[in-house]
Image 1 (cartoon, rainbow, N blue to C red):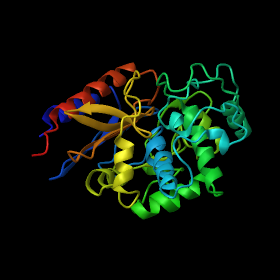
Image 2: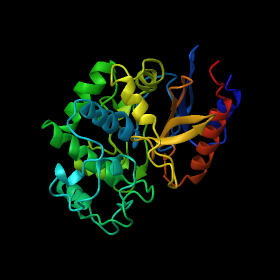
Image 3: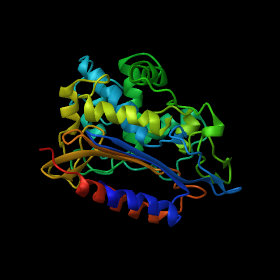
Amino acid sequence: MFKQTTNLLHQLVHEKTAPGVSFAILTPQSTQTAVLGDKTWVPEKTPLLPSTSNLYDLASLTKVLATTIRLVQLHEKALFNWNDTLSNYLPRFKHETITILDLVTHTSGLPKSVPHFVIEKPSDVKRYVYSAEQVKPAKEFVEYSDINFLLLGYLIEALVPEPFEKQIEQNILRPLGTKQTSFYSADPESSVPTELSDKRGLITGIVHDHKAFIAGGNTGHAGLFSSLDDLLLFAEAFLFKDGAPLFSRQSLDAIRENYTPSLNRDRGIGFDLRKIQDHFALYHTGFTGTFIVLDPLTQHGLVVLSNRIHPTRNNPLFLEKREEIVDTFLMEVKPNK
């Protein structure tokens, strides 16, 4: 089962599209895991430890595994409504018509980035976010942007006056029983390096994303580190436990709903949506080479961790291969009888 998907994942390593890959395929009957390839190519070639506890920089998977889940929890506590305007909670935010739903579906009209904005200290990150001008009206176009989820991280701290990192630890990681997930890699030895940077050297155990790094490593858009073992706990909650212990089945259904049916992309709460048979699967990627596909309806999932930006981010072939892998996986999922 999933022979084609597995072959494509092996090809990532054999064809040197990524140094190494750790992956899992989940079905109602079983979970298949594999760890392939190398940990580093520079300064020397070292193999990945044959372990599902290797630590990866999740990059933008933080958006769905931390920020989105925490927002859903706070929504269940009736601390906000999805159609509330963000400026109700963050008065410094100048766009008075942009809603929380616009941000979680990336339909805010805010840009991917603010050109020529220099970020050198933590306060610069907030200035960067709050200075962003809309490039399109809200609700008219899906334009993926880190700014949306940086703002949502600030929203979480406005709704509950505790540090974002502490809220994620207490309300997501601890109930889930994760052992290796955090906003900092506690063990450089088991951390899989990302990019060889001119300024930062070989980035290992420290968040790769520049904005998250300058902000201190714990932001709404990036910063989490985790292992395949721990990501299986997240996947199992979505696939086999109706969201427990993170949120209710009703919230899981709300996450899976398509809020942008007439726009250029299908988006749920936090997640991209990918068509599978007669419904949508949840999908998200991370810049460092991570991606997940979760289909609660058929109870199938794919978790892929890699350091495709090692030693350099100049690796467009990985992005092409990733699309092929996701399409193949969705094709190989058999409908529930």
